[in-house]
Image (tube, rainbow, N blue to C red; front, side, top):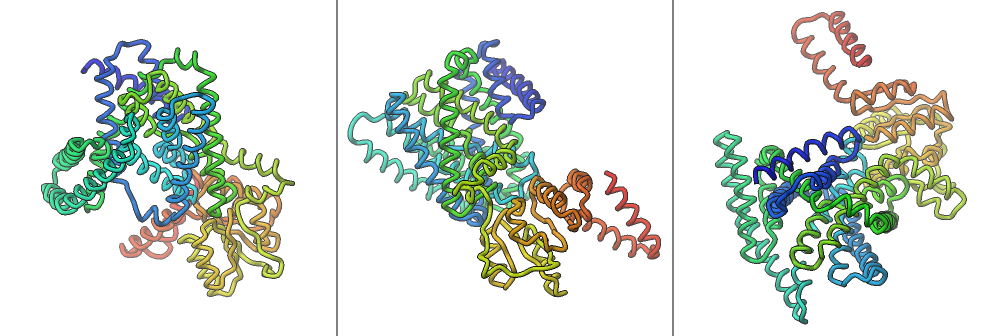
Length: 561
């Protein structure tokens, strides 16, 4: 076991470093490292799979810790209803194709279809974090959509054993399994609600991080072990433990303590998956894996895009969500391994499924990096088509209702900063128009009598709809650096005399925006720091000239970072 653990960790380190150098997701590097390492070294598969199982338990525990009902409610039905519809529709399409054209057994086809309908939360968060797009509307939709998919894995895991039944009693067994799960769920949550806060608070009072970590692991593994007595997945039990702890005031401390340990075991899980995939196998089944990959990405992206249109999301955001959901996620691996253990999938089908999942992760990460060029290409190709409106993010006003604006301000983004600017402009009597890609924000603004457009401010058509040719200035406060640069580039090219002011989120964004000849770049965090420094200097008895000189020096050094 020690030797196996050593080589798994070594493969993970090498694979992770290579993935970092190639700028691909680290989990892809882990799987590739495991796949290649499996050719070189001889591993005990049972040992590696046991280690991987612990990784899955801790992964599900952390998912439970991060559950946020408030986040789901904020995005609303597009994440909840949209995700469920996407799973059902994609599963139905893939199931029909696998049974009809690939001649795969119905039970195996159903498992594959359900697994392929899932997406990777880890990959989505990683890609969007690297692109500094955490505050965008597509980040909120994608992460919430993926969270609902993660939750959907649980009933699938519970019902999976019923697919092995050969008689007509599978319906009653499935119903019994679900009822048992609901009963255990209620019991664990009830006991947890009564006991978990008391235990965590008691241990937290010792101010010992080691004890807090031990408590978290004991709860995760303990509940996981307990629910297996009722025939329920251990990973589901760990998820319940996470949900219970997420409601305690110490949940953030527990998450920060368990995350390093979880990351190690999850890494072991992905490397262990690599052992199941031989590069020789991938080479000999290359066309099968390629066809499956292309078909899955196309179907998932198309279904997701259509569902986005159904819920009123268009343009770049709809395409971003579609590409983000198109890959197959890490929980698919869990389903593959469980199905293989139950005899639903044979080793050949399992390897094809895992290989296909790996390739979709690779392809999806590349596609997302090319999001804007893909969007622009589709817009150009559909320019004279009736469907062009679906790729332009926003709605237009009728000529009768369109206000005549002159020397007005365009507010691109109406979040916290945009609302304060709007309030100030209203008080001094300056006309402005809002562009925001949040239905709720636009609805509230219109109720207050503000000129507001629903749409993506980075779309030239939306800027023209806001009468940019007559505007005095554009203030950009949307938290998407790519969209910010697109707005600035369009305005500079077509309206060079227009004043542009932008909110920068990171120091690295400031130089890019200044290079684009933006008149004013504001970073709220820096301005807050300047305000605090000013107060400190005044309270320490410095005169006005000295204070101004010091603040000017700070601003100059910040601009030259």
